[in-house]
Length: 109
Picture 1 (spheres, rainbow, N blue to C red):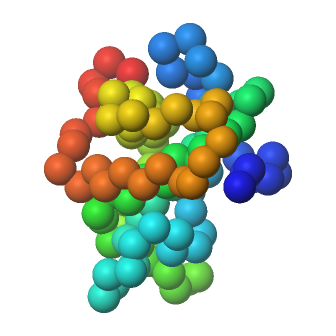
Picture 2 (cartoon, helix red, strand yellow; picture 1 turned 60 degrees about the vertical axis):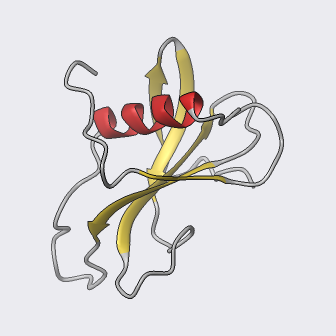
């Protein structure tokens, strides 16, 4: 399933361009509370979508500010981690789910 271009952000990780956005739907996990997540895909040859679960609580009420934001350095960390764990973003397939609650973002990204 490819991401709609509207509302996505561009990021380049290790010389490869991706598109990503914060997930407004609960795509990957069904915990008791909703958690913050994002999805990413290869920008020019989308295949399997990356679905990242941060493990941080999400505030779903429209009048509340989010408890945490998803920053580009966190997305870069998620993409690198997923690639290391076998995600092939240009190959078709089911979404690749990654749980990052215990992984800190790279400081130099």
